Image 1 (cartoon, rainbow, N blue to C red):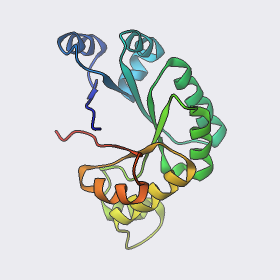
Image 2 (image 1 turned 180 degrees about the horizontal axis):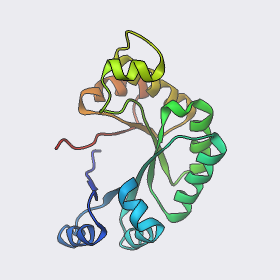
Image 3 (image 1 turned 45 degrees about the vertical axis):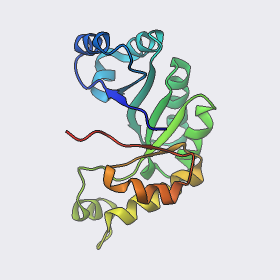
Image 4 (image 1 turned 30 degrees about the vertical axis):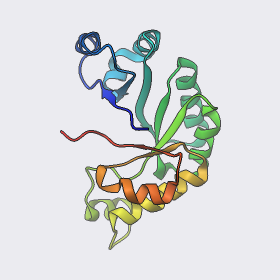
Length: 175
């Protein structure tokens, strides 16, 4: 079942006013800018309103550090959080294990700001096909036990083939 996640990509006071005008909202996304300014207190406030929080911080670090961050998010009541799949299988496995049953960890594969040449330069390979990279990283996420993947609308079908039924596909809105 598809659900809408409202991205709170604005200052906290504006986010509160928006949520007051949208009482039917069930999910909200908190990114690194808002989290950096408001921290865990805002997450506690939002979960206290009965909202499911998607914490989009795209963790990419050693497995132990990412597991600790995921545990912190889980303890705050976060419902979904992101890790970078380029952090590797061990890191993703640690994140999935730390999440437990209540927190869905989803993987970020290739950032939409990358083009093939720039991504290829970043990973040290020529002739990169971005959709192939997304599929490869989605398979790694599935094997590591992540709940799903963040993907563009153009990648939904390909990611679905890699992940199978029951996996989450989180698709950011188009501006």
